[in-house]
Image 1 (cartoon, rainbow, N blue to C red):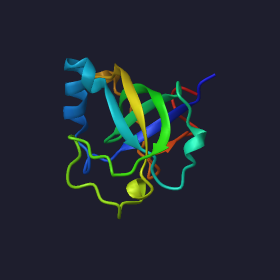
Image 2 (image 1 turned 90 degrees about the vertical axis):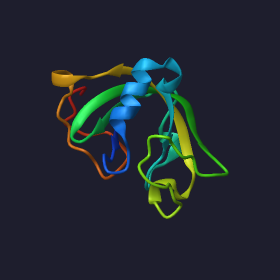
Image 3 (image 1 turned 90 degrees about the horizontal axis):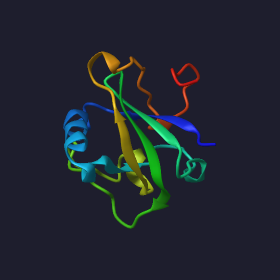
Image 4 (image 1 turned 60 degrees about the horizontal axis):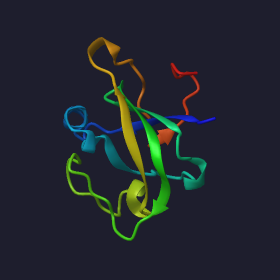
Length: 130
């Protein structure tokens, strides 16, 4: 049985609108590389786990983990990042990344309000999917 997580993006650091538009228009843009974040154990997350993506206090997309977290040699940059990716950022320091495929998009009134989190990936207690 897959676990369900919330993935929080920071609107000051990531252009989620362009990522969303690109993924709706081009199936090849539906898979993206995601960093693990801070103080998380990579083995906790499994292929097939469900991820609800939030940004600006809204649930904007849903995805599924396609590859397990693995350590990379170099930092992974994303064309939708706003500004440079550095090892000084805790979420990138250890270079743990997985691939997530976007499966659903929530537009307009279908974007549920969800509080963002300081932790990149989490399991909120009062989430709408619980």
